[in-house]
Length: 241
Picture 1: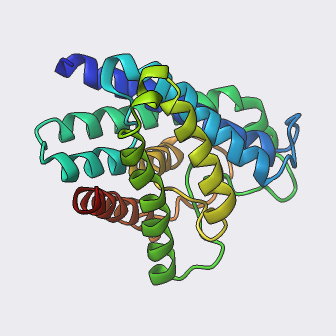
Picture 2: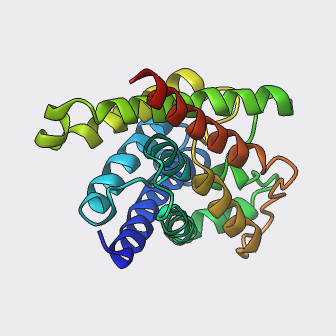
């Protein structure tokens, strides 16, 4: 894979991931959306389908990491770090682009939200927020949830038939749905630093009326937690498998 292919693949794939993921949250929480109050199961499946669409699109170009935690986990396992900055740069650019596209899709709903008597905070559409703000507990949740993502992804690579049949990405997509349903309650399961930080930057910069805070005090947890989790998953895989 050339450097250009890797960067472009990660930009496109991550943009699709965030467009679907942020889009399903916007669909469920914003007033005047046809999916209003669709619930957590809808959100979990929307993110899973976003992983499927983004990873299948990016796979021919970059392998479809779409997540710095996955990239770090692979690097820890293989010892190959030279392409890591390129992957992460593409993922961050793609996450920013996807968040902007989501805002454009729901532009009218964002405006209508601002005109409500009590406007809803919009950060949760773009990034994660904890249900109970406890930095230690929140960090532990993100670490464990990311290990639960990256370790199976690495193990799936040992199953030859998944790669040959092209179903590995589909299995990973359902894995993300499962993590959302089982482990997403405490923090909203960032499990991906680019997925959280890129859209949070977009939320801070976009002219969204009455958008509320971007909560930079919490922003380090969905970055540091998944990075630690990805590295731990790579280490566990290297030792155990």
